[in-house]
Amino acid sequence: MAFTLSTTKTLTSINCSGNPSNITTFKPPKLPLFWPWQKVKMGPLSVSPMGFGTWAWGNQLLWGYQTSMDDQLQQAFELALQNGINLFDTADSYGTGRLNGQSERLLGKFIKESPALNGKQNGVVIATKFAAYPWRLTSGQFVNACRASLYRLQIDQLGIGQLHWSTANYAPLQELVLWDGLVAMYEKGLVRAVGVSNYGPKQLVKIHDYLKTRGIPLCSAQVQFSLLSMGKEQQEIKSVCDELGIRLISYSPLGLGMLTGKYSSSKLPTGPRSLLFRQILPGLEPLLLALSEIAKKRGKTMPQVAINWCICKGTVPIPGIKSVRHVEDNLGAMGWRLTNDEQLQLEYAAEESPRSMIQNIFQTR
Image (tube, rainbow, N blue to C red; front, side, top):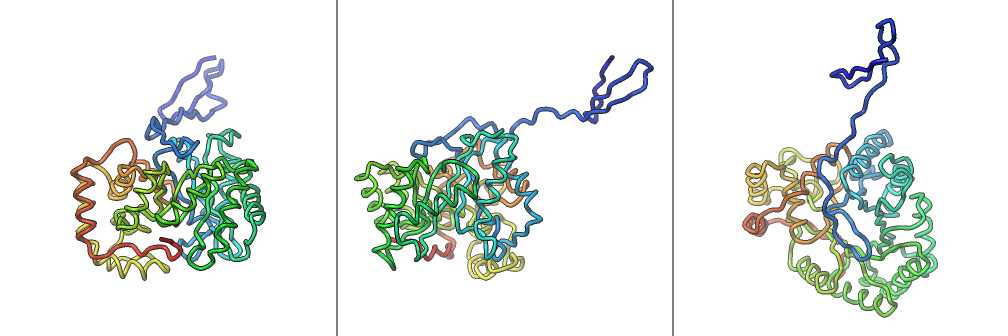
């Protein structure tokens, strides 16, 4: 029996009479678009220089999620894994209404069914955030929240358990309870590391010092950090992180899409984002022009340049993904670096743009 490989990549069996039979599709090995040579340290973990966010997964109000998108989301997740991305950020509050927790449920399903992971949970780092709901008043309730997330994610241990926001501004007594909750989930082995989100520089130092007295390192601090959000407070947070050995995770590195070049004052996204875009986009011409110029010179896209700037600053950006196209484009942010002059050009253009991103209402000082 002889075999021939056709140009359509089908393997055809030729029987003794010379007639073809048993046509089998031949699938060549899929090579990564970008070889994942580099990993960065995040506490005890080694993660890709960029992760992906899953805020949109289950969010109908802001991102227009529908369950019909799930197949596309799963393909996007698998493509990311195949290309060396091992960090995925989520939260127990992601998903609107009856879909609350949907982001974690989808991640759990995709992890379980992933050919790339082949049942090996340690091949992916899941960082989930626990909401500081007013009814979470004991460390035990926070531990229960962690167990519920593990159940939805169908995994035995989280990569990073994160406090979604600080209550210091409005419920300072609850804050210490939440910190104790992080300690408890770490000591019980439910998480490999702990982190925080939306903490300002002063509160970040406080929780770092508290966890240190309990013998637990603070692994990461997740804040809004981008060319649209690079003000004095962001720089202070970055300095604190560098000094204390905390890895900064930059969320919204594309400013909810404002830095992609897809939108203008006459072409706005649908839904609530349009209100914000209408307010900020008209003042972004200097920054968008600089992004466009560098993208053309480098043979990159504007989102790739904006994300690469975050990487050059020593942060781990987590752009959101909703499609295979998003993954393919965002992967192009890795494997190269902006020059110092290009970084300065972008930062100068950002300062020349009269508008900047509205900060998270839960951000502390």
